[in-house]
Amino acid sequence: MCNNASIVFDAGPQEDNSGNFNINWTLDGGTFNTSDLSVDVDQTGQYILVLSGVCGTASDTSDVVAIELEFRGDTLCGLEVPGVQVSQQPEGSGTWSSPAENISFGNPSGLATTISSTQYGLFEVIFTDTRCPDDGESHVFRFVEQPVVSILPEEPDFCVDLDSLHLETLLAGNSTGNFTWTINGSPSNISEGQISFGPEEFDPLETHVIEVRTTDNFGVCPVAAGSISFFGQWCAYTIPNVVTPNGDGRNDTWDIEFIEFFPGTRVRVFNRWGQNVFENDNYDQFQTSRNGRGWDPEDLKEGVYFYEILIPAVNKVESGNLTILRDARPNRR
Image (cartoon, rainbow, N blue to C red):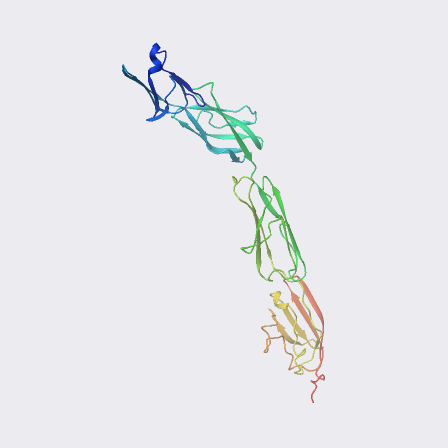
């Protein structure tokens, strides 16, 4: 029996006294009709009719096999989808076809095939059992475009101490429009297509990774992910031009503020005769002095000195005058 078809079982005609018969139709042992000599059946199973009366009992049996087709899935990701299958009971063979001109099949005579389309959208596909050439089973497949997401700017160049960072998604394909952001592996509560950060939200001298993920509307495509990475570049520093090493706790040392965020910085200080009085090839104000606050010119005389600072991290050279004052004594009572 072909898919979606039915068969009429008819036990008549009977003799005139057939109205006195007891009628019992069963399907796989279960009664489903006790009043009609003719029934319409559409299921697989063993059908038995028993007619009984005062003259005796008569019965007949028929085994029915209904061809059943079941398509696996109806929403496909991409324009070429392998492994699309139809389940066929009892087993047999058939052919795939489609009224849509943009649909083609990799194996049109197999239960499993590759379906290709030149367009995204809804398209009808037909599987026709070879035993039922006039009874093809229609099924509508939806072809969904794989979402692709990226983050702009791709290589952000900004100062983590001074600038804000604004990121936006560039989206293609089918998407729910919902996004999941992670910053250095930690999830964010932002679900929109853009995210912003203010100054000093990223640590200097560290690499940061920001990722965004999105899914398609139907949940059939792989998750789309885009990411960027950037180095935490610190840009500002302050070079004092006066040092008062008098022990009052203010300006006692030469603190080049934030210079620790510029590794490889070379610092040289000269007196007025050009003699080198201080030099450090990897200056870090928290590592070079005895008190951990900067260079302490305690052994130098009062006067004007000249400094030269090479900062390869930002490809800059700073130079200027440094005045050491010793007359500014702490107030005493």
